Image 1 (tube, rainbow, N blue to C red):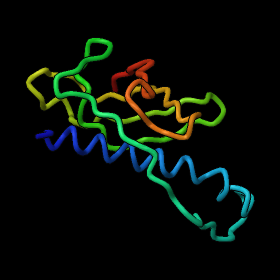
Image 2 (image 1 turned 180 degrees about the vertical axis):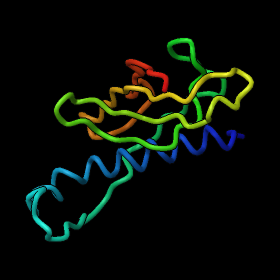
Image 3 (image 1 turned 30 degrees about the vertical axis):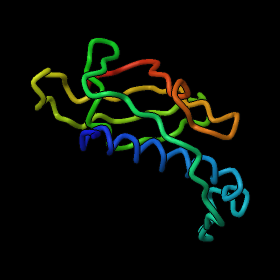
Image 4 (image 1 turned 120 degrees about the vertical axis):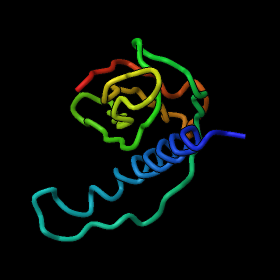
Amino acid sequence: MRSPRTRRFIILVAIATVIMMALPAAATSAPVNDDTARTVASVEFVGEVVFPTGETFGGTEIGGLSSITYDSERHVYYSLSDDQGNRTSGDPVRYYTLDIDVSDGTLDDGDVTFVDVKTM
């Protein structure tokens, strides 16, 4: 059985990927500066990636990931870990830079790569 933290990250990555897959179509419906509402016509579940509890990157335990955003200029994702350093590991609040490869239309093991971690 997956831990609640692992399930949250699966959902986070799945939702973010679905949204990112839908954005190119939605973004063409209105300019960014326009007050016109934009809508997403459809979404598609493209897969999931599970990171086991206790997995680490850059000396921190991966976990508490609660948000994700895409930087279209740098072609990377950022994900905030807001576990507030309350875990036994004592890791500070931080964000990760991620590379997520869905170029083949699916999200599978190996498609999410942690690139960097910054503490706040």
